[in-house]
Length: 310
Image 1 (spheres, rainbow, N blue to C red):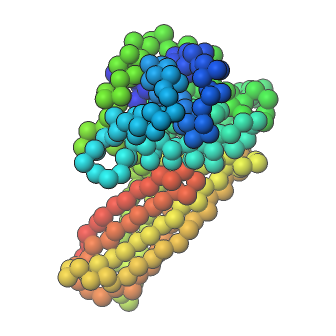
Image 2 (image 1 turned 180 degrees about the vertical axis):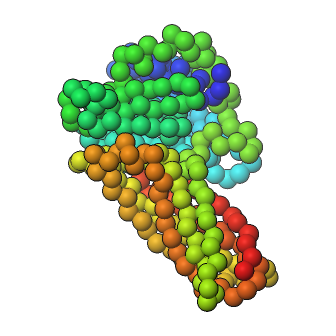
Image 3 (image 1 turned 135 degrees about the vertical axis):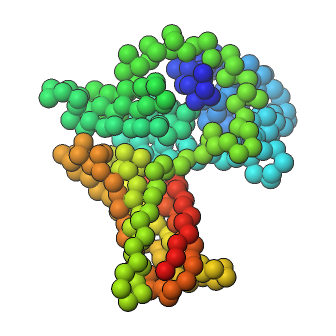
């Protein structure tokens, strides 16, 4: 079982348990910083760590917090703790992505899964329900496992369906392994905690008069879009840079592309690609094109490098 499915197992099984184990008395005695810490790490802290933290004297809490993140740092030799940075980034993204409903996005079901597992491999939305008389539904795929969310009250507060929560019976054995911080560490070169947009490609067409057209494409199904009213929206910031054979910059391009897909077109749009074009005046020679795409909705990125001749 891969690491993402292990995280799914512990998330579905352990969140209610951790909440039940919380000591009201211990929480009330915490200073604001400690209370914020213990609240925000609810999706990654083990029950043993939580009990230990609540039992600490005030002067021992800061060293505990530092050690807590160090034991989860995938690359201890670097000054930045990538796990901690990405964990808090996911909380921020969840608040932006799941702003509907009656609670902050990171505390909603979709936010909890997003923080625990990261962006799904595939996401399909049904704003008007799977069937004619259905309820708004989202289906997330992590490998072969699906998580179904249903907006029962049509208020953009999607809850995990009972059928999805029931999958815990299949994968609960991964809980013990997941709860060991060292087992969650990414190895050098892995991207367990990175957010990437899959499927970026580019078509290069050399025209008459020295103009070269670049057409980049990304499958819409791989772009995270936020539900906003009766549409799904995102903004992609596209940067292109061309350098010549000597490494000198020959051309640059930067532009933001808003995406706004009406509910009625969601199913059709998911089968289509997002496309962006730019034209560069280039002389004959050897070049390298570098592309960076950033989805400002959730912070995910995609990059590509392509060599070409004119």
